[in-house]
Length: 127
Ligand SMILES: [Zn+2]
Ligand SMILES: [Zn+2]
Image 1 (cartoon, rainbow, N blue to C red):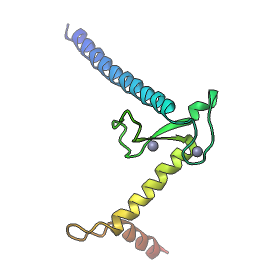
Image 2: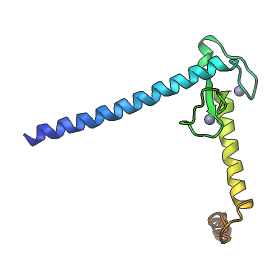
Image 3: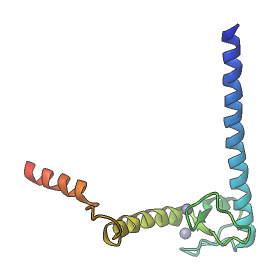
Image 4: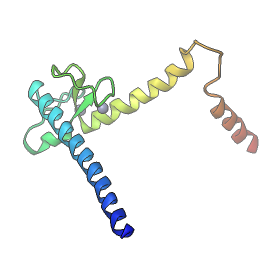
């Protein structure tokens, strides 16, 4: 019956999603292994060395933040420990924020920080 067919379609979709997920995992594993072979197993920021079990703390950072951009020469990769990797991302996020408000000059000037300014005055006004 139709109930039965719907079940099969759902399974098919699940299978596609599952395959996509596995494919991505396989790809991530591959570029990580490549990067570990290509570079010394040392964090690019703090210089700590990783080996054996601790090697899993060493992660691959994508310089342009595009995880699909994996040139085989490793030019888009950087090995960072979990801690420095996190730092790297929050630092970049911060600089992106300040960049967008200071150096964006094309188009009509829209004050990027206005929602925050409005919020601030709202908070101040409440006191
Ligand atoms: Zn580190
Ligand atoms: Zn990263």
